[in-house]
Picture 1 (tube, one colour):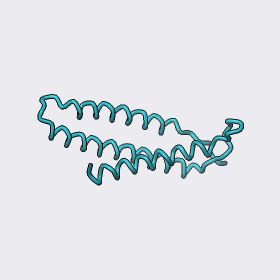
Picture 2 (cartoon, one colour):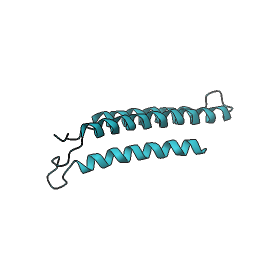
Picture 3 (tube, rainbow, N blue to C red):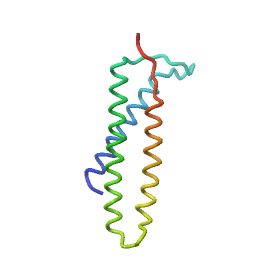
Length: 107
């Protein structure tokens, strides 16, 4: 796999880890209640960066799948088609999780 593909996966993993860290930090494990807050500017920036990372990782994955397709002599390249279905599903779930992230705002 090429370096750009791994860079995109790394960027996506970092964005998701950042999102997960924010969620974990905002929940008190003992009570399950939010305890931490985040500034609006930080929250908005994290949301933008997360969406950008998800979009870029999806673009890179589609490009990678197309190269797989180009190398497959079959009329219907099953690996690329399955990979595309998996990629679309992951993209939609990642976007939905990013949209659902609503940490408490510091006043």
